[in-house]
Length: 478
Ligand code: NAD
View 1: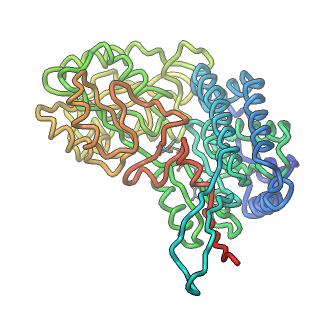
View 2 (view 1 turned 180 degrees about the vertical axis):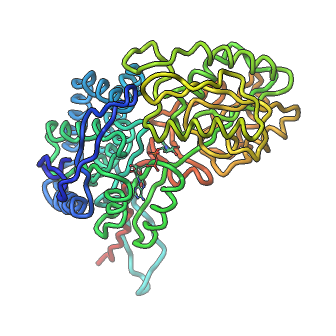
């Protein structure tokens, strides 16, 4: 862990093992932080907030952030290899997303550091009569941010929280997922190397129940920034409201992909490869419920099954492999249980149902047809290489079925007819609707969920509001 400028073990001396999902071997151990460590980190973040950091000009904050981005790139291959060893994902994705997109995001947010502004306001109040006032708003850092991140994009999710916090002048205590702490630990070292004052970003490793809960409950944390499951997000939201902490929640999803008869069938490769199997299906907006119109239904089943079968399974260290291990033995068991549950509930598997032989936490991809809304695979997040295909005739049925979920993170419409696209985009209850593509967030495009997929938006200008308070100033003129 890094607290202030010090690399520390947990106060209680406990550690957590970290595994390589491709082999099941232990590759590292990290401190198992708890209440005392979190308290120390929050104190360091508070001291930094009141110290040198608060007096640094926006352009100086920007300069440090740009240096952090440069260091992410300069150490990119080390970070990519570390991420793949720890998370299991393709090293190609580690290079592209964990390193490339993270450096880009840091630079994007560095740009905002010098563009934070309030407004001047004409006001009507005139007491005593005739008195004039000068009113304006100031945007001020929300304070100490407690950031809690998931295991599916470990480095990238850390940067999604740290970058806007720094742009707005906040300080951070981050608690990475217990499965994948290594790149976040390294990132915080790089922040110090870039010249970020000590205590501005601190990392406490440990479990959700211990370090995560301690951070959530800490009275001196002003804002919680959480990405993870809806179940844990609800608990964090409730705790945040008890203390009136500011909170953003980026939670789970069960994204529909609606395919109309006039879709371009050549795009099914993208629909399967990027829409569903990006990161081996361990993506919050993975398109796990396909709704295909009757005219293309058979072709969609056939081509998506062919594409899926062609995806090589294996270690992420070989970039040719596109289905990589699940992050942990526990998650492998969960995804396998979801597949078994689908079969037990009467869905038809289109692909090989035999377990994947060999070491590591691998699961064979699966596609289900003959599904209905009451099946768990239609309602619950599998978070693995599994999706369903349901036929429809009337687009109204497709809209109804697509929205028939507690989630509302992402969705896509596949059609070459502009009128179809324009008619149905507004009808889908999701924070992002892609058209003829799926699963592509961008730093400048607000990202977040409707319904139980979360509260608030990350990315773009709207992300800044999560890390700023608005202060109204009203000056009576003499
Ligand atoms: P998770 O909710 O189990 O864990 C996320 C983080 O919360 C981890 O750091 C964990 O240690 C911590 N945590 C667990 N219990 C806690 C508690 N009681 N108090 C405080 N912290 C606690 O999620 P996961 O399994 O790591 O990640 C997968 C989930 O994340 C999926 O549901 C996925 O959809 C979601 N996700 C959402 C987005 C998004 O932007 N909406 C992005 C990526 C992942």
